Length: 256
Ligand SMILES: Nc1ncnc2c1ncn2[C@@H]1O[C@H](COP(=O)(O)OP(=O)(O)O)[C@@H](O)[C@H]1O
Ligand SMILES: [Mg+2]
Image (tube, rainbow, N blue to C red):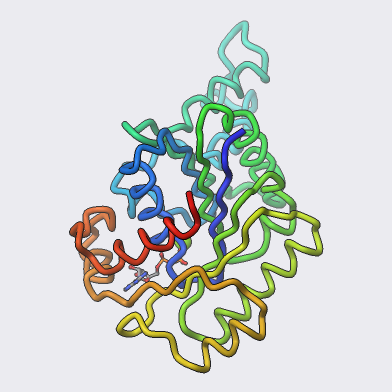
C-alpha cells in the first residue's frame, strides 16, 4: 500500500505550490515513482510541475454520459461500456519520468460531482499499489474529506497563510477528519508565505488554540509569485530558493 499524503487548506494559501515542490523533492530523493493527483476541479498542479494537462477524469465522465447518444460519442463496435471506460481511464495518466499525474478536472454535466469524486477514489485505490507515495492536492472545500474520498490517507498536510482565518480553516479540517474517524497517522500544519519566514505571535496563538501540530513555516518569496505571473513552473525555482529549503526541512521532520 502506498503512503497517501493529502494536502488541504483554505483557497489561495499555497497548497498547489507546496504540493508541486513536495513531489519534486520526493522524486529527487529517490522516493519514486509518485502518483500525483490533482483533485481540485480548478486544476493547476500541472502548471506548477510544468507539464501539459491531458484528459481529465471529468472529461471521461462527460464522454461516458454521452456515450452512444450521438455520432461523436460512440463506443467502439464490439466493446462493452465498461471496457470503454477502462480504456478511457488509462488515458488520464500523464506519465513523466519520476511521477504520473492524474487530473480530476471539472464536469459541466448536470448533477453533482459524485461520479467524478467516485472515479478519483477508485482510481487511487486501484493504482496505489504501484507507487510508494500518492500525493493528493485537494480543493479548498471540505468536499473530498467530507465525502471520505481519502480514507486511506496516512499523512494530512494542512496549509495556511499567516491569517487566523487560514489557521481556523485548517483546524476545521482537522476536526472533520476526527469526526469522520479518518485517523491519518500524522496531521500537521504548514504556515506558508510568512514574511521573512517568521511567525507572528497572533498566528501562533491561533495554532495553539486549534491544537494543531506545526510542522514548519515557509517564507513568502517574491520569486515564487513572479514565476507564477510569468507562467514559469514553480519546480524551476533555483535549488537554493528559501521556499525549497524550508520545505526540505519539513519533509525531513515528517520522515517521509
Ligand atoms: N511561499 C510563497 N511565496 C510567495 N508566493 C507564494 C508562496 N506560496 C504560494 N504563493 C503564491 O500564492 C498563490 C496561490 O498559491 P496556490 O499554490 O495556487 O494556492 P492554493 O493551491 O492553496 O489555492 C500563487 O500565486 C502562488 O504563486
Ligand atoms: Mg490549488
